[in-house]
Length: 413
Image (cartoon, rainbow, N blue to C red; front, side):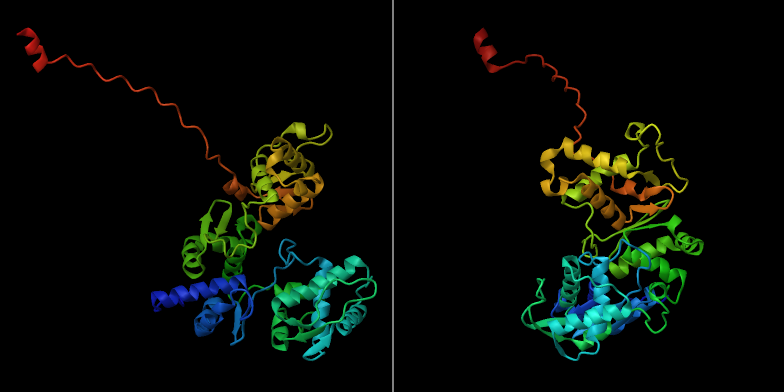
């Protein structure tokens, strides 16, 4: 495979890598948005970037003067991926809002847009309740489109509203960006499930593109999670892939027997920082040693046997086990945590588990409950204040025989 960076000067190659990293982080890059100052550089190197993404990952890249759009495949049925500000209901309203915006032109009143969205919901068979959670979900969808630059508030603002309906506002639509949002093949899809399946299709090079996409987009890739063809491909090419990902995207890979962990030294491509400084992140980190150790029988009832080890190296855990570990950490170090994060033990347990799942360190199994990945050993904290061994006392210096001195001679005279 031809390396796009070959033949470039060091400066141009470094700029292409920098632009590639920005596009991986922000697949819709626009001049007015975050990192928008790099858009001219992306436009300058658009041909090299298009070849880089097409060849290595099978991604399509569209670059215009005002924006750049990197079309990534969908994550498939992966509940750990997605926009954290949107609930499932919010995602439904996001799709309905984009459908409603398609035929309204360049500007629309907020009240008219809300009416069109609800009409589209009824037409699609989506139940509209018009209660407070429903309004918040619709507002979150509109706010997300605002953050993407697809709509803008020309007069008034998009905000939660009361029983009388939304406060009036004039919304301007960027129809060019709106047309670039969707990446799934809508015309080919027969139903929503089929659209999710089609959007997650592998690239033109099959196993090569599928595995490399997983390495670039996920912090942990376990061989046991890969189909046999992809697992064998990774085993044959893991050394070459390590060098390729570092040269093209600045990513560092750590290859282990059970799989590959990928990190970004600058933490720029990391949407979930782990370890982090928050209470949930630190408790999750401190809980790992017990989660991957042999389970303590005292944590289980007499009629509830501890989960048995698995052949693939994963560690089965129970929610009660994780809850007990979190509660003990909170009790042992009460001044170390945020009171708001620890006042509800069940919520804290759920948030710790959700963080581990988003990091690829925990997955839910229909029979064994939750499984902790063997790669969790990489994150097990090691104390940095271990006292050094006490050194034996140094022997006293040997005493020297007294020598001749001028005063001795004077005393003898």
